[in-house]
Length: 111
Image (cartoon, rainbow, N blue to C red; front, side):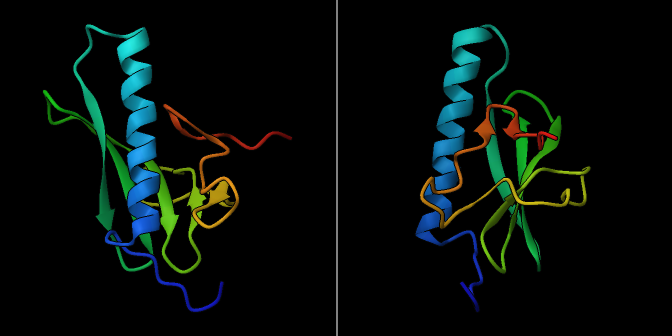
């Protein structure tokens, strides 16, 4: 997977983001039907694409995941501006990056 540069227009990335949005929407509708609707948006940076969870009714937002543009790794946020170490999946693996994703983002690593 050398020389990969993932961007927001790649079909693989779009499919992954749509699957994540579907997972979030279904989870919120099932467990929190009266809460404001939420969705995920992508903000492309030079090294990472930041996935942001936003409420449709307000200006609140939080970092939900990061995608490493150089290799397609799915990373948990360490905070608003940077990802945690160690990939939780990859857009190009057999699970298309969804194996360790929940409505809350990429899973914590288990020790």
